[in-house]
Image (cartoon, rainbow, N blue to C red):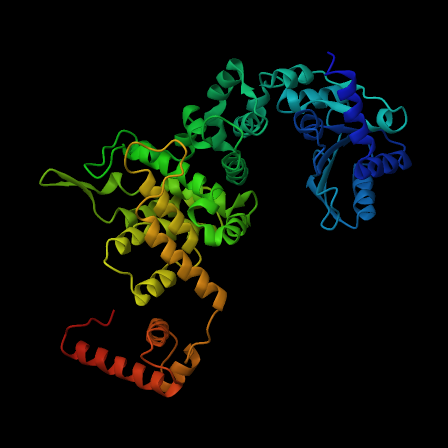
Length: 506
């Protein structure tokens, strides 16, 4: 199969010849008397984007560990074993601009052709011998599965009918590559995905999580990633709690079913993240930096927030009631926290990541409640920041997306501004103002409170610290002496109420 015109082929060859890490890898392989093959994603991305990228995948028959170690030393990087059985090593380069990772794998079946046929999809199963590139100045593609043809047609096709059975996580990888590479899932590929999708649940959840969140981070597709996962039956498979949301009517306050509303909230969350300059122009650069923070492998704050937006009302099905013909979901935010804690555990999310999800779930109604007041006091703003510790912008963005996803018509551009935005902007201003000022040293810390009142460590000490912080912000106390008198009076007041039976000890 001829791949493109001669000019294009020469351009690709020149890019490979001008790549320092490829040339370095070739020289090292020759020193070890080995042929080194460039395989997979680098060749795919060269065709699709015209760039070899910064991640390389190599295959070599022997001396894999020595070659990987030598390559790592050449770049001042580190290497470690990914799979001792298959002889796979990864090199990490922190300082170099032209390469991030390089994976070196041994020939698993002793045959390059067999190894390529055992890869996931045909577009990832093409190889080039670096000897042909750097010694013969030629491109000779090794393509036993027909990947070049599928690249030209932009089709996702498995290398063999058993490909997904061998590694069910490839079901999610098919979705990711179709979106990332703007390729079509062929009908036969979708049929195989449907037949193998239940096997996915037997795979390590760490791998499922990574693929899932990488899908959420893709943009090159006509539908949203969540809609695509739902169409393929993968979303409810991984999060069965979502099933109860489908078809659930929300009453007069909503124009959409709960499921439609949740998908739209996730969609508008993504819109706001991409259009921070439109929604929060005063803080757009800071928010852009904030939401690109990587919380853990493959998960940024932005992708996590889209995930959280989908789950923000997950407590509604279990709290639906009807009062005088009106639908209510009392305490759905608190019930949602419990459900989302279990989902976070299933996805093997870290404690910090899980806390962001539950914080947004618990408090996503707070901005709306404040918006319904005549004015938002300094004290109310401070309490919100305190309660949303670590997830203030996250909660404000979801609150705005929640409002946009409530009533029809749903603006196709996603650039509409909900009334809630005024309060959200006020709170965002307050957050960045307080963040810029840094953490103010309290008039009294926990140790000083325990010493002054002869208290043991416990919840009461933390509560007194918060009372001092609030009183200081409101200007009621300004010195350490006033702080001591303040907490002493608060303890005396609480003791009096307990004596009268108006305040429990718990």
